[in-house]
Image 1 (cartoon, rainbow, N blue to C red):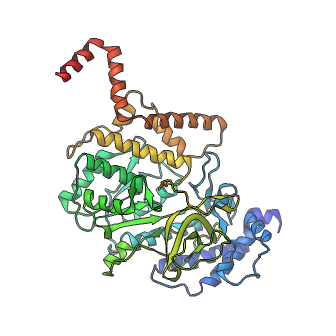
Image 2 (cartoon, one colour):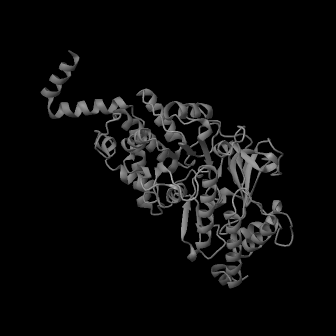
Length: 496
C-alpha cells in the first residue's frame, strides 16, 4: 500500500467506513435490549478496514502474523493495549478529517497524554452510544420528550474542550436536561452556592434532579455537609451518577459508605445511585444497572454493568491474555463496533470480571502495564475518577480543595453573592487559578509554556496541602503588618 493511500485513504475505504457507520448506528439506535445477530461479520469487516487504513495497527498485526482472512472470530482480532494511544496516533481515517479529539488520562507524564481522534462519522457514533446508554441506565423512566434538571459537578466543554467526560456530560445535558441544568465546576472551583441553592429549590418544588460528577467530588461534598450538619430531602425520582470505576476504596470511603452518604445527605436511595465507567479509547460507556432494574420492577442484585449488543467485554488472564470464566479477575478487554475511527479491540489496565456469561462486567482495580508487561497485583492506592495522570489528579485536588474552602463559609439556605470568593481572595493563595485550570486541561507542547505550567501546578500543590488554619494565620500576619494596633485590639476583644 502506498504512502499516499495510507495518508488520504482510498475512496473504497471511505465508502466502507460510512456503510459500517450507518449500520452500526442502526444497531445502537435499536437499543440495549436488541440483538446484533451478525456481530462477528461486522467485526471481520472492521478488522479489515482498520488493517488496511491504520499504519500503526497494521504493523502491530504483522508482528503478530495476523491479517484479514487469517481469522474468523471476533475474539481473535488483535487487542491493542490502551497505553499505545499515548505513544502513537491510532486513527483509521485521514487525520485531516478529524473533527473531535479527546485526551486520555492514564499516563503519568504531562507531555505524553494520548489523543483519541474521531472524524464526523466517529463523532456520530460516540454521541449516539452515549445518548442511548445514558437514556437506558440513568434515565430509563423518562418518556420521550420529558427532561430532568441536571446538576453537573464537572467542567464544561468550554472549560475543558478536549476532556471526554466534559464532552459526554454536555451531550447528556443537551439530550436529557432542562434549560436550567448547569455545570457547577468553573475556573474558581465548584460553585457551592449554586449547588446548595439548586438542591434547596428541588426540595421546595418537589421536582426531582439528577446529579452527575466525579465520585471524589461527591465524597468531599458529603463529608463537608456532615460537618455542617446539612442534609437535603430530595424528592422521589432524584438520582445521582458518579463517574469513574470503583477500585474497592476511594479516599477513606468504601463503596457502601458512599451509598450511605448519598442516602444520608441527599435522601437518594441506593437504587437510584448509578456508576458509569468510561474509557477514552473505546466509544461506549458502561453503566451499572441498579436504577434500570428498579424502574423495571426487577429484584435487586449485586451490581453489574450490562454490555450493550454492539460490544463485547472479556476479562483476560494477566499471564497469557486468555479469556477467563465469569467471576475470575483479569484485564478488561473491549470489542466495540462504535470504534470505527480507531481499532475494534482495546485491552485496558482495568482489573475486573465478567458476569452472566459475559453479558455484564465489573471493575475492581487496576493493573500496571509497562512495555507490554502486566504486573500481577493491582495498585492499592485510591484511584482518581478523572483518570490516573498527574494532570487529572491535580484537577481532582483542585476540585476537592475548592469544596473544602467554600463549604467552610457556605451558609444554608442563605446564598452568598460572590462567584470566585474563596480561592483567589484568601491571602497567600495562587493568584491565577484560572490559569492553572486552563493549563492542565489543554495540551502543551511548547517547552517554555510547559515550564510555566509545571511551576503553577507546583505552587498550587503547595497551596492545597496547607491546613485551612494557615490562611487565617496568614491573614492575621498581613493585617498586623498593615495595621498592627487595630488587629491587636481586635484579637484582644475576641479573647475577652
